[in-house]
Structures are given as C-alpha cells and as structure tokens.
Image 1 (cartoon, rainbow, N blue to C red):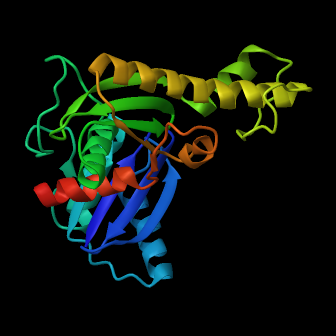
Image 2 (tube, one colour):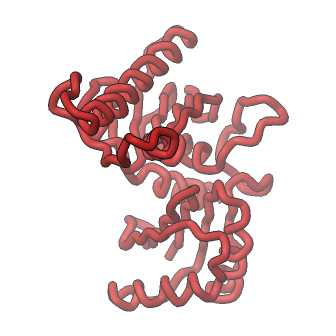
Length: 253
C-alpha cells in the first residue's frame, strides 16, 4: 500500500492507495513542529477506525513547507521501514524535465499537478489550482512543466482585505446572486468571486494567445468546483489531481 502525502502551506493531505484506487484520505493542519511519532499515532488511529490494516510499504511526499519533510522522513523510516520519495529531489523521476530557468525552483505541488494532469488529460494544458496561492501552470505537449503564474489565493486575499480595513468583515467565499452588491458583505463577495473569475479568464486567454494554440484548462483545489459555476473556462474539475500525480510519480520510480 502507498501512503501519498501532500503538504500545503495551510493543510496536509494523507491518502492511502492500494494499487488500484485511493481507499482513504485524511486532512490535518500543516504544523512545522509536529513530530514523526505524532503523525503515526494520528494516522494509526484513523486507519484503525476505518478498518484498514497498517500495511504501508511505500511513502511519497510532495511538500511546499521544507521544515515538515524531515519528520515525514523519520515517520517513514521508523514506522514503515524505508525512505520516502520526496518530489523535487534529483533522484526522483517525474518524467520530462521542467522547461524553466536554470536557477528556478518550482513548487513540488505544481510539478505533481502537471504529472497528474498529463496522465489524465494529455498535453497542452493550463492547470488552475485554488490553494493558499492561486496558480496557473502550463503543461507542454510531452507533459513537461513549462512555467506559469502565481497570484494571491482567494482566502489570502480575503484575510488581507479584512486585516487592512477595520470596517470590513471576514466573509465566506460564495457565488453571489448579483454582481452589484447592495450591502458590504454582498459587495465583498462579488468582488472576490467575480474578481477571481476575471483573473482566471483573462490569464488563460493571454496564455493561449502567447502560445498561439487552444489549451484545455483543468481546475483543482478545494474552491475549484465553486468557481467552475461562474465560468466556462474551467473545462475539467479534478479535486484529487495532486494525489493522482503522486501515485503516477510513485509508479515512474
């Protein structure tokens, strides 16, 4: 059984794959101080509650928080009898090499999404990930990562708006009934929702124009289904794209 771990800036996802499908998936907050033993106790309790035997034989990690990786290495060595594959390390095969600047460091999550998207949808893609940051990444015809765009994430923008303007409340993200709001909350919801729709549509159009070809757009991340309700530019919604990419990379290695 494979344990795939996706470490984001806000949350971590632990998924168990039995060689055919994901049989369980759990989420926790990303905390740099959490020890290997704490991870194992938490995981073992969840596995027991789900009736899943502790038969993990391989672990693969994608992390944008380097401080977390050490304890995940210890977890794998101490409790699962080996070393994890860590995406981004030179020895880990992810398929075609990224075509970016020689000195560029690409987030592991973006590389994994490119691998997963190419496996499911082929090449010439734009992958839009609604995470702590909103990223738009280009996947070439052969599956290589070819660069992209990073913008502030939806919830990050809401927090910045709330923190910088004392009179503005912190709100939930939702699709507003009207573009023109008639109260403060409705105005903020419209600005965030339609503002990000405009950002996605505009940047996707510019990427397609710059490359001179049509490109399929794949949305992922927790808010992708919500934003897909407001635009036709998101042609595929794939909320488990990162975990799928980790499974594909495990097979490559």
